[in-house]
Length: 353
Image (cartoon, rainbow, N blue to C red; front, side):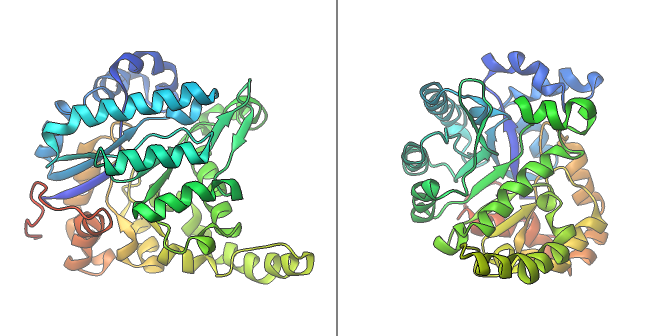
């Protein structure tokens, strides 16, 4: 399929990439590490060549993990976010028919984060923001700032005003949480378990703490076909509606106004990033419909060759799983095209076989 749009695609400032070798080694097999370190630094060379070769018409790039969320000092985080956003805007400016970007933001101060998001969208032409899960804070980084708390309403208000989505992306556990939960089971850090656990907690917090009720037009994206949540939809919804809601009402505590399905079908999109499984895609589509799913690769943690090889190589099976050729085009291109109001990108109207 030509003209695919991909939007969980990471980069790093070249001067920082080699410093993040230890972080990358958490997720990249040793024989593949040099390939990753080369590709994470390439915004417009190898990335575009491989994308062109595999039918990706537009890519939205974002700062890799842990990004700004790993910087515990507020002033340092704010300064580096501005530096990163200016850097990527400069790097992609000659390739805007193929490349866009998500803003990197310091989430220490919601008002400042909102101001930087506004600058990135209005002045730099970015498509929203990608946040690497919680903001680490405090002298030892042990404080985790979640964006489901009322003080972050100032940030969500601006995201809604700008009408841009925010991508909640995973990051590795740190500090005491890592020592208590994962130090003795380190091979579960990342995609095997910790990524989904982290983002699931954060996203379900946004739901149950009423963020979508206060901001009914808020748009959130999560990757990896929903970070395990869709596979537990029935059980989560059963307990929230039949147990937790009555408990909240008895205690006089605020809680989300709707069931979990409502928010996933109105406010939340999921991507195929790093989850190239046709049976799993069908399962998620049966719950949410093809309108809530977006194609993505998760480059360079996953390869474009694998992600597009699955999407194009299993075309007939994927079309059947999604409900036909129209649904295939929606997931591969048109849902993102509508969500990000994209036009004029490479192969945007290419026919689907």
